[in-house]
Length: 241
View 1 (cartoon, rainbow, N blue to C red):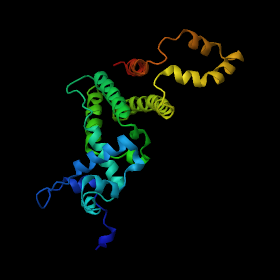
View 2: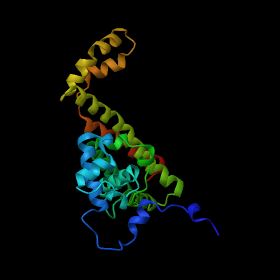
View 3: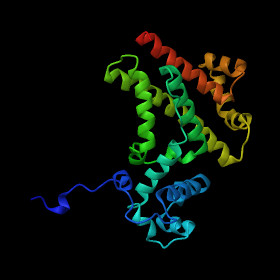
View 4: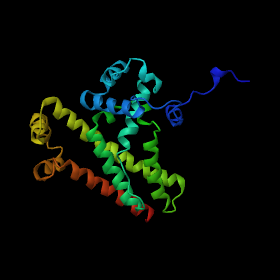
């Protein structure tokens, strides 16, 4: 007979799925997540500690441990809570589903800047709301008759575009916040001396043409949606869907 200590520990969602043996008190997993999200939105992930959570929740320091084993599980609750706001359309085609997924993810990342700073473990956490999003997305792709590998490849291609595009956008947003800037021209003014030197070398004529003629330098939403359209067009053309 295997030693009890060798048995796999129940994960967070398995524990929360079981009915509570006693009526729920004021402290719940959802309330822990909501308070933690509020702290992270205002002060960043580093501000979240079990002691800080207890203070904000108005409970004893050890009370939250009835629901979570520590900060890692708090992060899972947070991810689950905010992704529950991302709703994908029912009975929609693959392109509308993927577009809604991309735009919805961008909106979440702009609203909750700490999402881009999660640890790999938290970033890849399998929460119920994220699993529901993946299921609906894959279902829309599966309806095309794609094999399992291609289906997942398309899903990950769109996801990779979103996170790649948002890496630039959120870095720009962080830089502007750090300096108190509110307009794109302030960023360009700060980078001006470097850019002027590069342009004077004559090595980058195409980039110079962009600088002189582009009219949507600060239209980040337009840039995102345009790039997304190119990705979806490419998928459609390659798979003939």
